[in-house]
Image (cartoon, rainbow, N blue to C red; front, side):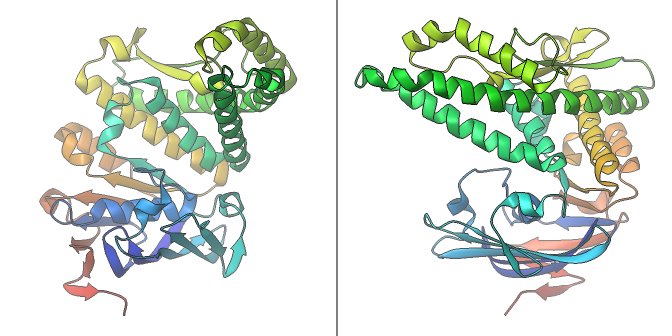
Length: 375
């Protein structure tokens, strides 16, 4: 898939701007705080409806503006397509258009423009808390499996309602009468999440092991293990079996949740662990090993998307090359052939021969020495 161009209006620090892209490598260069990452974020949002730096739509709208627009022309699924998002600063729901036709949900444009983002924050995910690893995995699965996005949204909605019931139980004891109903719904949807995650991690581990073997010259053995609730003995079991296992787990924690006034366990606590030569990287991995393993995971995600969709997703590298030593830079650059790539950097000298250079200055785009602003 190829993103031919993008138009922004009132998005972040872009009042109005347009950029034309090369089907190969695109270098987004400029000083810090000029808008390079904002442009990368807009590209990712165009295909997924998710911003990787905020969950609040209003923060994407230029200060003082009522709305923002992101529009792009894409070649995907063997045809030219047009995507457009209209975002509002207030509570008004965002609008999605595909080829000029308004859509109800982001799921209706799933697969049109897939992206794999690699940013400096990702280099800390394997050493950090479980929430960051879940976000990394959930973001990838949502693009791979559109139904997963809807299930995850519904699960989080019910989970929020359950937590509210537990917190309000002292003021309104009668609320506990409906708690079993919420647990049943969480188990039903949670079983789907576990099933999707197990298959994703199986494929991710296989591809990441392959990349890491190349990266380390065969010196390190990469492995990945998915962790979910203790009553799930086989995450590849049929969904109905997973549902019963979740019911048993929640039942065993029923009293503890009531006493703590919070939802203590479930798929929302899932995690995965990466090991090198049998040792958990979170506890024993060096900084270099963590970076190598993270790169392997990102390249594995890209490979999985190519396998499922038959097309290469866009690879978005947000200032990540400057965080890597020359050997790791070379490895990443050697793996980015065969698809469209966007690289942000402050010092382009090492990379200018890779492809097209687009300069960003204070929310404006300069291509080939010419300003590109929409009137």
